[in-house]
Length: 179
Length: 440
View 1 (cartoon, rainbow over the protein chains, first blue to last red):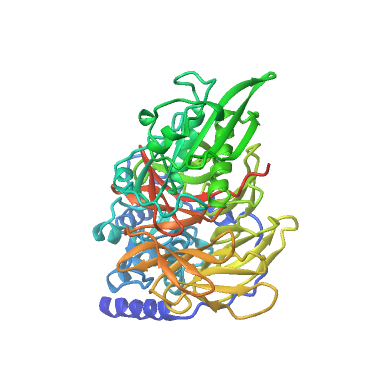
View 2: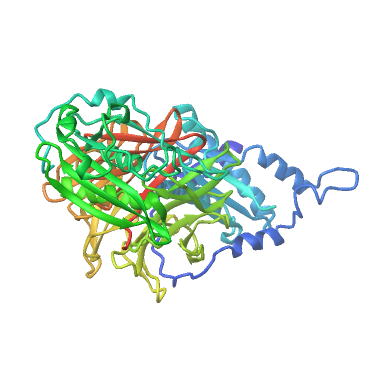
């Protein structure tokens, strides 16, 4: 059963990665676009990571689930690729289950690249990665309003260094829950 | 060179080890830049810039030193060391040309700083040592910007008289510095004189700052800041510090570039992860879509006539440079074909060449594409060179490189013969952009 579930998710993710981005015809969105993010901060229902803990220091089921998710909140990518690799399909699915179960929860998907190549082009690559994760989450039932994406390109490396070991750590999407 | 060519000297070796140590008077928190010439020119023209009269030894601004350093940093001149000067003439009448012929200087500059009403003025003269002919003689009042600015102006005039190319020593550079280690880093947008002197912070943030761009009048900078946790494009007036946010649309707001008339910005925006190029009229806020490909389209750069844009796109699978006309719904034309990666085009002031980042034999390097012949010439040889920007006289390209695992700035002459590095004493330095000529 579990295997079938993973397989289904994998197929979904792969088909998503391959699918064409739809053309948008909606009018220009003017002005700052932080509403999703600030909305998330006030309506996530978490009340901060620790504020909602019981008097005895016990965690609610939601807090425990979130704490577990934070152990696997980074999805790594191959060089010049925005395809979600099979080993991260489970990770994406776990975040999707949580977000579906707690529709007030909000996440910010932060796309990153390694330092090679030009900076603004890397902003594009990071965005592609963040969008790949976003589409995978939405395909598993997560509402669009729960998700915000941002690309930092090569501007916020996880680790310093100019070798393949550092590059591997830096090509990533971080799933960040609104506090 | 109008004169002095044909002379071949082994100055390259001397230059290679020479650290000029042009340290800026930086306030706290400023990364200081130090210039090192990493590749000298064999036939740099020898010139003597004699210490100016009317200046105390160790004066705050040594006019002759500023001029000599400028000329040296152009890569085209080899100023005589002071300890080798046999005399210290401060006017043409005092120059014994036979002495300077023996020192093998082709040219000599003499001058003095004199009181001028409430302020001061600099008088200088440039001579051909072989013929004794006066090539240039001027008197400049030292304005509100001080003796250093006047000295750069003199270097500009000498450079133009001897090369036929306007000097760019009175210009500035903008760049981004980053201090601290991930995840807590401090980003600053800094402007300094073209020789790295006098850095001052334009804006700073704990979130990334990137992609600075000068307005054509040199009075404003556009840049991208993530200070709101999302990317947005800001426009800041340098004289007052006043700034406004010109684009904070959903998704990416990046890669601003001013149109030649300064009225519009070409920018990159995203729709569902798809980056496309738009133009934004700064007065009317009118946004016009330029590309609608499903690939990454970014890093726009205006053509000289303002009627088309060069940009980076991976629509053919890998990053390449394209050109698209703005006045008609025309398909973009691919511009680069050599090498599997060409990005971040920047136009030369005459509009004939593009400086760009190319993947050359495993390294990301700065190259120049001749738009007429389509010949691509690689100018640098490191692994991680990026962000090229032409000096407004077209003679030099400033770019970002790595120096001992840190971001540093470097310059290369557009013919690739002369290279120098501007190292920082702390943190990363990146994304240099050269200002336009100052309005006089």
